[in-house]
Picture 1 (tube, rainbow, N blue to C red):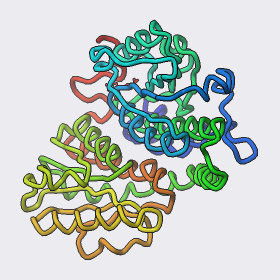
Picture 2: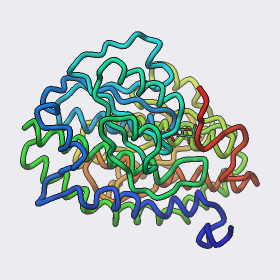
Picture 3: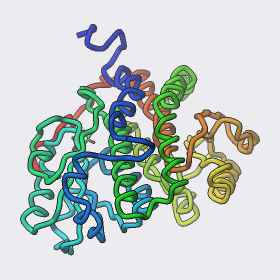
Picture 4: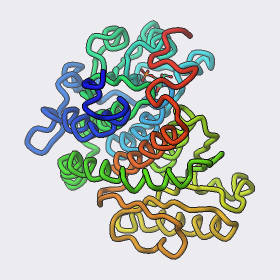
Length: 372
Ligand code: G6P
């Protein structure tokens, strides 16, 4: 078994390091002459894609956070309203489904019963369904009208890592494909997104290199009982994912918040020494969001928080207020989650390890939940 782990102490550690390939393999073959083209979507017919007036993304757990992140990109590029619903909530609200509705399911295993039941419900009502899935020929992609596979390779650790970044990547490709077909994607937006995709595998590899710094941090924080995560825009679901990882494998109470929501309640939790990870948007591509997040950092710091800031390289604005600064490569705002989440994955893994827990097989959880 040690061999399967490629010399790493856990499958999760190995899978975190495989993320450059997970992203690269998911993109491969889907960018042609500077434009994104997903053959499985082309097969649905461009007319059908042009008629979509609403997208519902359904998923559970980590896949739902990938869905939330994907929603920002699809809306921006394809100008279609996107909502994200948890699979197990979807059917019970008597959802409004019309001819123009596209349902995109996101599932690593393709066997999650909650998601499968939601997909079947949509199919019965004549809705077009697209499956984003990491497992070839699993039930959900087989049932769906089209399958856009992520190519992360088999994921063994219960806590999802490489499948998550591959899911975000696939949803971005879907957004770029839809935007091109529908004529909503400007040439410069397409060019910069394709350039960001090109650069991604190498940048993900750089983010993986934060391991040693994070291991140190986790070592000092081994007794931590609660950790908060703050982010804005795409940083918000990234914060939710950072918190989920910590709950799943380190059994630590953790919560993710939208940074702007802080003043509406969660700031009451901030006490002396409370660790808070803050995902700081780029000051170049999102200057307004950046300055708002920097003020959030000042507010929590003034109340005694221990701030761990994840910033883009060269951003020195938080240095006076952050206890620790983790640097990620420069990319566009939408692509930041693919880099920011990696130190959060390492943090959960290292804290779990420091507590002597089984990183790959956390208590009470299953890799694939095939019951409702
Ligand atoms: C389980 C796993 C989670 C995963 C979720 C969705 O709860 O423990 O890690 O995110 O299922 O799984 P899926 O295979 O549908 O992506």
